[in-house]
Image 1: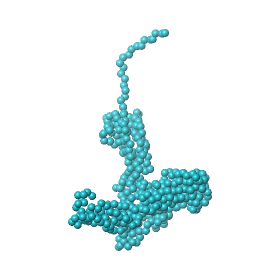
Image 2: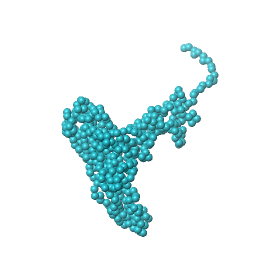
Image 3: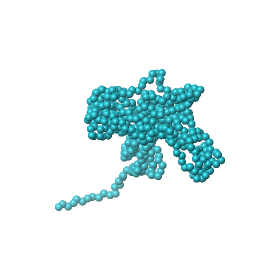
Image 4: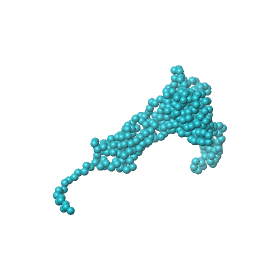
Length: 455
């Protein structure tokens, strides 16, 4: 605070809130004190707020519970646990699928190296899926694989597995194949459940773990809906399903979830918690708690990817609210996509036959829509962009009947929006010169040319 404000104060108080507890005044000091030191008793999420008391005894804010916290800190000192299982890809490649069990996992940090004898090399990711590595090479049945990872707090973990022991522990008979894709029948018999329909890589269950089949009496409850105002374009809302639950796209890791609580008893609602799974219910992680126990609830997702969400509700007497167990299915899925599309302008070609200008581009994205392109033009570098066409299909070309009275040069811009609302564009750095003048010739005179004399 500035010195003028500090001169009007008598004391400064530190308030701390841990978990579902109440705000507690933990420390106080004179207004000249520049900081507080607070030692947390255990891992968890802590909220901090400061209350000032002026020389007339007035507190600001008057009620700390009615104000948002000034600082939120998650303390995590426990290293993650690495779970490794074998898996066969749809192409018949033997892979190692690793999952992080942690309150704050960082799946992109997973690395795997293989050591055969004195030789060590890195395992390549399968289709760029974090935590899934392709196993290939000779003598892999004798190999030792070292998997390393860290969580979002920087805690590191290492796990060493021998491939033969890992396959044996999973109960899969038969030898370890010497190369990915070889002996397809042997690979298929090595790992069970390869006949399951493939799921998206970021939510696919490891081989050998089938999604539980719920009886009709335990059918999924109504799905919570994400508000379309939170970085989600309503016109691009999709109805894709994952594991029977609806998946919605957002372009930020900060999500807002609307919910409704039914069958509230006389004790009321004591706690509303939100849990997340990144592996279709194999492991669950608590994301946070709704402090006011009223919709909506805000929470932070760890990264890009597809995450299953489930709420746990406890009544005022502490009944209910059990965390989801292994195998419980999410009630909805959220896909976080913060990566803008790739877009590139190609050389512009005039079409002589019908007098149009063909604008050509290349655009790609994992969540590209059916009509994601908007085209613009302007005649000067400092003039505003004019719309050529909106909601254009991503066909890579558009014939533009350019305005004949706008001049002979144009700057062009192609803008691509994916289903999550991420936008990318490409522009021509130099104007496209369009000369529509048809050359004409006029005969001036005709004269004869005398024959040249011979040698």
